[in-house]
Length: 325
Image (cartoon, rainbow, N blue to C red; front, side):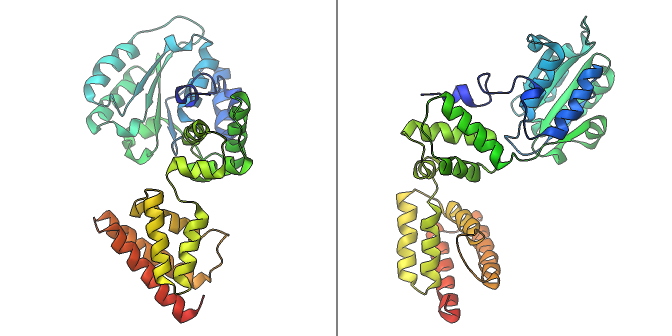
């Protein structure tokens, strides 16, 4: 059995070098040129979580400095250490010192920099100017718009995209083979769908499903706390056929059996109405999407889950009786 700490981008499965990084080919090619010239600018890695931003930063440092790259690199998680005092002490002390060697600069990696306070970002902006000769800053951010404009203008921006399905499934299958875990291809595809291209989350789900036993589609839905899409589709079909009482019973079964909140069910309904598994007229999909958005807003504002979802099913039942889906 493998453990979560071994898999979440840790040394065992994290790419050690840029040569091992997949999917982000354009970004890797640009970084290789910097490495060959041994001249790296300040950089901002932006994109969704779990797409390899931190991993690529480590791989870059490894290719620049070799196996002992960590002594030339200061890594801080800006969501934890995000105050101005950290920038004025830890970062400043590291940035001002010089190093001897082929590479004339060190690297400061500020992970999740979009969580830094405005004052800390202003202080960082000044450090990036003062110590650019012997220190390069790499910032990672899920939401680059939260990084102040003066910092963005000082950085070369690299935009990471969500990983492709075949890449995620291939990596998960590789992990299963190495850890002697039995898994179904359909289950790995389901993990990708649930994780939405987030490799870190995909590995987390795989570990949780493997702890139960053989990794199947059913165990995946069980460990992530989601209802099986087939059951959600059955509930929708019952409502659209005019069987409101049966649809309501199915809803209660889903909420009790899976322990789902109203928002969880709303998100699954939204996903299912646009899936290829359910055949609905486009006009009806538009109507359902519009109403499910209203229900989601009410739930976020604090309305009762069951009452709102019952109202949604009642609306579908009335519409279904009129158009006879």
